[in-house]
Image (cartoon, rainbow over all chains, first blue to last red):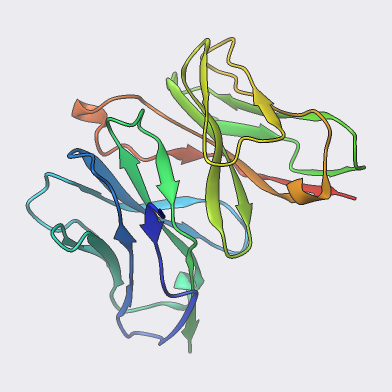
Length: 115
Length: 117
């Protein structure tokens, strides 16, 4: 079974609007971490935000926030006030602590921000 | 601070050739891993290591070998390259364990674009 599912291969958003990128995960490990990475066209992987499985509050980092719904096993990334520089691939990832800390990645969502 | 360094950045191989992708990190991270990135497939784990002398297979290990003789280095070997191994390869590292490292992300190298013809 897929550990991480990202169902939106591509999305468009108007500049200055908010956008939500979906991510669902599958694990039986009680202790895990959820991560979002950005990959611009230059190819490097840029860490954006982290949510721990025991965190009570949703993580926020500047314009990024993570909508964590543990019972539904979802960890959606919300980008507020989109900018042209946000155009990139976005990957959701999960680390299972009791599974040797392996990272699993989703297939990614290509976000295009329109001026 | 160099972080994670991958070499080479680009490589073209002929079918059947062998080569080693190099990965080095200077952060004293116990955990290191190799991924391949194919269009529409995200990053898939090839092999990983939780410390010097310890390696294990990930999701797509066939056709690849690894070893970890030092904490710093984690090379990936293709023994007999095939066109199906054309991909972008990423090396990543992070500290092991939870506690203060619970929320530490994986640090990635710049990637190696490999083409097998």
